[in-house]
Image (cartoon, rainbow, N blue to C red; front, side):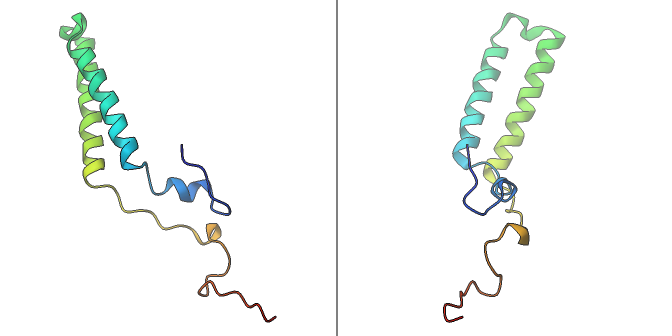
Length: 93
């Protein structure tokens, strides 16, 4: 789980999406779940086929996301730390 770093909102952390390792772990879980459902006795039923199709769609979407992750969203100014004028601190004031 990703936690917020001092001064950065949780929304800014979530804007970058899941780490690739998290995506791969989720992909492994979905592939295992697909294998279980394909090898189940109910795989030939209408409900079983619908479940298998749903898992296959999730796997396909996740593979696309892992191969081409979305560009990180811009962090809102409210989540930035300090001034946006170059990050220089006036120590002589």
